[in-house]
Length: 141
Image 1 (spheres, rainbow, N blue to C red):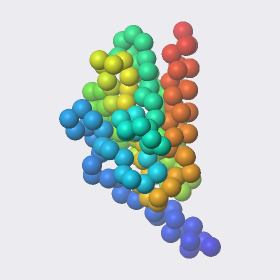
Image 2: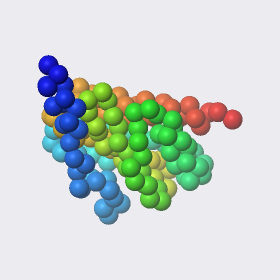
Image 3: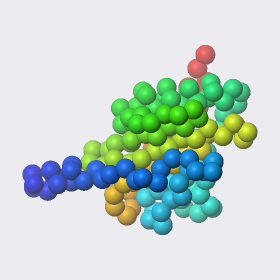
Image 4: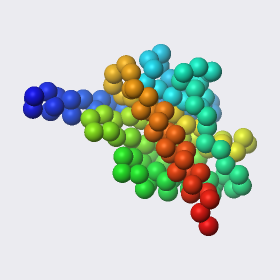
């Protein structure tokens, strides 16, 4: 059992090389059901972007603060209007991306498992938690 657990802990997987922004878009989700994206076509992989009112830079700074406060999230790369994060569960690492869309007053989101086929809805539920925290942070004075 110990060997199996150690094997699973070592199976965090490598970060995909296709992450990042290309032509204003995040990477498309693979065909497996372990990815959600606000830029996906309608369907099971579609999730709403984060919406905000007011200053886009202030909204993005608020998102960064929300992510910094989460114990399961580590910011890996930051560019103006873009964040790449690792999202950890006990045994697995997922990759999350956030892209500021100033003209639409939204932050595009994507979260995908590195390994496996199904994530049992974890990427969607985690992004919905982040959405709730992001909205709650807007309400604070």
